[in-house]
Amino acid sequence: MPDYSGAPPRAPLARRAGWPLYRQIAADLRRQIEDGELRPGDPVPSEQALVERFGVSRGTVRQARATLRADGTIGGSQGKPLAVHGATLTQPLGELISFSAWVRSLGKQPSGRVLHLSAAPAAADLAEQVGVAAGGTVYHLERLRLADDEPLMMERTCFPEAIGRLLVGIDLDRESVYAALAACGIVVASARHRIDAIAADAEDAALLGV
Image 1: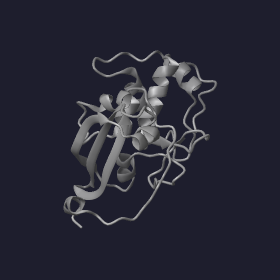
Image 2: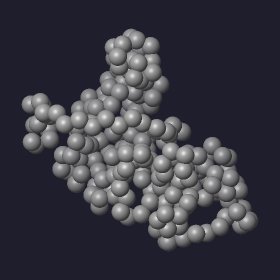
Image 3: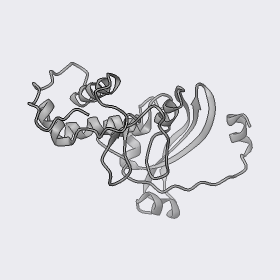
Image 4: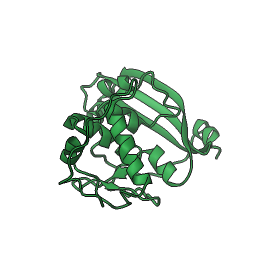
């Protein structure tokens, strides 16, 4: 693995019109992975190493790393250093990874179909889970998720207003929510998993083809 700890910093990145610096850094790290300079299992260079290397702020580096984590290029369990993912990426329950990244790890193309996105007052039980006051505004997102255009799952998500409104106007048929939020500097840090087997209602059955 390359050692950047003693390497001289590179010249600051040249700004490209319409392409934020954090995306340029993310692209450079992707190139290193594709070229084999960073291999599956290698730790991702630290924030400080990337700050010195590219001559940018720590916030810019955090956005770049968040972007790569959102699309599954890098990842790590809570409390452990980020590492480069391999081609055989899996999704253990102790690690967060987006649907898009998981599907790409299977060699398929992720996509979706937004069925519903709207704001509404939160009922008391939902408000407690989302962390808003009862009656506070939340955004409900419902999507059919596909892999190579084959229906794979129904996704129903609820966001606090401050997060949900960031998704309005984004092409969520194609864009990963994780990636969209990461581009805004918001990283999903932890989650609780609950897995149930239930009977599909008529609407879900028709959408999923079951």
